[in-house]
Amino acid sequence: DAKTTQPPSMDCAEGRAANLPCNHSTISGNEYVYWYRQIHSQGPQYIIHGLKNNETNEMASLIITEDRKSSTLILPHATLRDTAVYYCIVRSIQRGGGTSYGKLTFGQGTILTVHP
Amino acid sequence: DAGVIQSPRHEVTEMGQEVTLRCKPISGHNSLFWYRQTMMRGLELLIYFNNNVPIDDSGMPEDRFSAKMPNASFSTLKIQPSEPRDSAVYFCASRRAGANVLTFGAGSRLTVL
Image 1 (cartoon, rainbow over the protein chains, first blue to last red):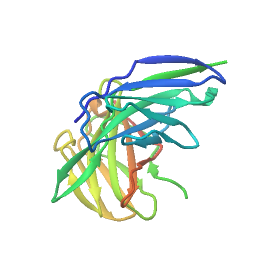
Image 2 (cartoon, rainbow over the protein chains, first blue to last red):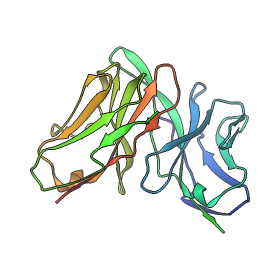
Image 3 (tube, each protein chain N blue to C red):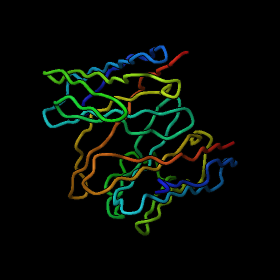
Image 4 (cartoon, rainbow over the protein chains, first blue to last red):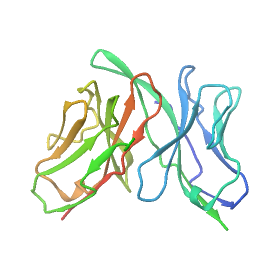
């Protein structure tokens, strides 16, 4: 499984953009990068995913470098409610039971604190 | 859409007792995952079901743990006998066929005394 490296913590001022980096230098050509977040006492929540092109949705943007060895999650206007642990995950393909499936292996993530 | 529903939300039990955690996936989702979260080990995948069949149980820690999915709308994770080191938050997640997104439940916090 491709390993990801994230800073353990980051701070961001409310209203500013939060840029969360992630290194995944051993990623394979067909492996997707996923971002989830976990707000305190809740289950993880999907944010965005991508393969090699930049992606944007209503929550965030995902910028993947051309060599795909790193990516950045951008929350364009962070709010206090964005305070959470953010997980960068490389989805690996596992084989079992005669089938294959995408497996999400969570690391330690980045604790993002948005302050007033 | 009520989301993934887990019960109980909190369980406190004594060592040696049987614990059963329950999960109702989102209707129409055919994949179900059980995860465990602790401070020391983070989020770990325990078992994955596809169309009610266990596909990957390599994350199940030991024989004390068992999981079943008798139908598409219900799954259980059982620990018998429970031990203090089983204390954790257990999450269930489901996914629609062909989709890339896992939807997690709110979790069941288990404390074994």
